[in-house]
Image (tube, rainbow, N blue to C red):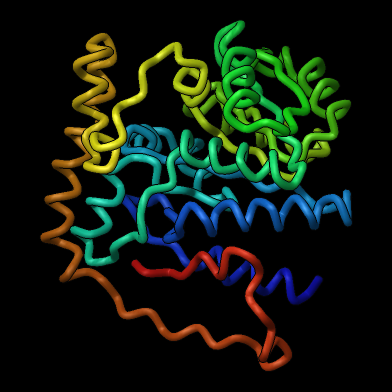
Length: 292
């Protein structure tokens, strides 16, 4: 267990600072491997604490800058993935490029694929009534053999915690995909994850809307080019406020890119304790290192 604690601490250091948010520099594959590792360890030792994952985008960053509580919840998370293309662009501007994006949709699909192969138990929590059920039906069709342990739209407020906890506990889920939206899903996880018996909670925002087909997903090429924001503006013009947040984020990122070279401090090399010499990396590698 001491070896695991050291490796977890090292993983947590491997982050890129994006305006106060510690964003993990990792790939989709290493994120999935880490989640599987956390789930396996939790099954072996149910007393272990649950792990919180935040899938962050520019809107998250700008909201957290105005909401100290949300900023703290994100900073204390066990993993923060770069969901929005704005974060990868900002990281490159800051001279600390990320390996790529790990979006809520892509992470959910990757876990669904692994579930069909390994039996990883997934619980779909949140979204509007009927949306999670439709998402689950599509996932079962796409990934035969997937283990969806439970589905519940639930209530993001503390008033709904008791019923939600009962359902998650009874399902023996490994991973809870929480689709309550920014802030609400993070607070739900802080209140309930350790009581639920699940190993991991992942805030996935509007992912179920896409997986259910309720909201059209941008074509593959558009996603590869990082132009989902333009596709969303065309197909969902009523969500223009989100794109305003991205514009504000981009403006700030450009300004900070001129300032950072003069303020960045050189970080000392991290030397592992001698008792951990020769310890092999966990699946997914050591995913955190302070880069900024």
